[in-house]
Each structure stands twice: as structure tokens, then as C-alpha cells.
Length: 330
Image 1: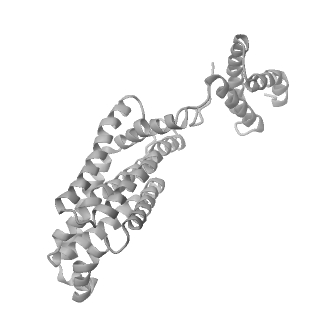
Image 2: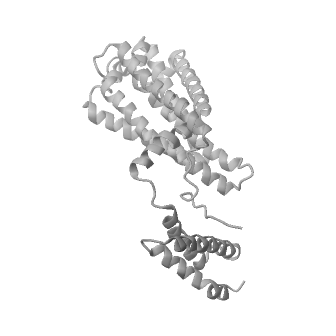
Image 3: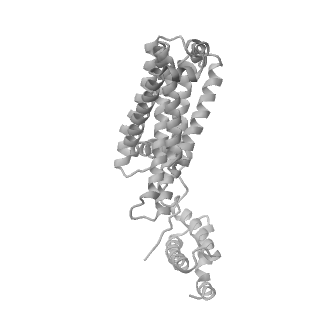
């Protein structure tokens, strides 16, 4: 195909498409003409992309079609509608898709933590290698609890929120490597298990759970969710099915980055619990009960709204046009 000759033949149609797209109001005939020209130009773009997909002409036609599409489809939904769609459809559907992988990761995490805790508790030599008896007693009898109480509630809540949100975002974003998620989860399981083992060795295991569970129920679940999303992104290019690896990775990445955005809010709530509930003077049953209610609220949101959105065809991905799909005609 001679690109210059092709441009010369169809330039009039493209200019007319620009003119109609720029008009504030269209008559019935002009609206019909706009639609016909849009379909015609879409066909032209498909032809150009078949021989020169990265050409300047291809980019110019894509821009023309984008303006025209906005003209006959109307303005995008307002901000409130976008936010509602995100929290009612996209986010719960994305959570729902990875629910079983989230549970599996949680079970493995708890098992690894328990093994580390049992290793520390059952081996006096390990305890000695961690620190002196005086240092460990200082940790289990004072430092562990003081960690939650030594800073102002609001600043402490903000600190743990940003830290955990950053870890969750890394799990999703770097999950494509296949290595980052197992590494982060393993290191966290090791830390939790060894801390619990030290507390158990000095008969303070009850204190460990009383201060870990109020916020940890949701906080650790959020990390499991992020890990599940990251591993799904990794698997999308390992086993792309009938799609190309690039297309599969792009689709899954768009769908599951939604999880990272949603976890910012989830971890904010968890941070509030850790900053204001965990160190509070509420009865132990009340503090743990609040943490359990937060976790129950998450799973209710995921299983009820998520199932409904998923069954309706929602997967957390962008719309077709936002994802870059170009309308085509035969």
C-alpha cells in the first residue's frame, strides 16, 4: 500500500470527521454522517496498522477516532459514579477472583510462622543466639507492648498504614517476577514466628496474641491478598492460555492493580485499629472483637458484593475503550 496515495484519497473524510467532532451541536443528518465516518476511519486505521502499526498516520487516526468517540458516546461518567463503580463492582470482583489463593497463602503463612515459633521455643540454643536473657526479658515484658503505646495514636496509625500499604503495593507490582511475593511472605512469617516463639519461651504467649490479633487479623490478611494478586500476575505470563503473553500480562495487571488501590483503604482501617484499639484500655475481648469485626466486614464485602459483580461479568479490568481497544468494523 502507498501510504501517501492512501492519505490523499481519504484525507477529505478525515477532515470532515474532525469538523463534525468539533461542532457543539449536530443535526440528525450530521450525527449519522459522524457515525459513518467514524466506522470508515476505524477501517482505515485497521488497514494502516496492518502494515505500519507505529506510524505517525496511525497515531493521528487514533486521536481522531478518540475525539469522535467522545462526541457520539457522550462525556464520561462523573466522579461520583466512577468511585461508586470502583467500590461496588471493580474492587470486590478483583478481591473475589483471588479469594481462594488468599486463603491458601494465609494457611501456608500460619504454618511457616508456627514452625519458626516451635523452633525457637524448643531450642534453648536458638534463644541464646538471639540475645541475652536480660535483653529478651526486656523485650517480652516491656518492649513488645510499649511498641504499641510509646507513640501518639494518630502518628503511629499513620506510620503503620504507610508502611503496610507500601509492602502491599510492592507485592502486587513486583509479583510479576515470581520471586518477590514468596520472599516478602517468608520474611514476615519468620519474623512473626520468632517473635511469638520468644514470647512463648518466657510464658508471654497470651500477651503476644492479645496485642497481635486486634489489628493483625486484617493487616496480615491484606498482605495475603496482595501476595495473591502478585502471584496471579506472575502466572498470567507463565500460562497465558490462548492470549499472547504480553496481552495476558497487561489484562491481568490492569485487573489486579485494582487490588493495590483497594488495599490502601483496607490497610488504613487496619492502621486505625493498630493505632487506637490495640494499645487502648478496652477489655481484651473487646479489642480482639473489633479486629474480628473488621475482618468479617472484609470477607462479607468480598463474598457478597464480589460474587455478585463477578457473576455479572466484572473482573476489575478497565472498560474496553479505557484499556485501549479500538472499535473495528468489517
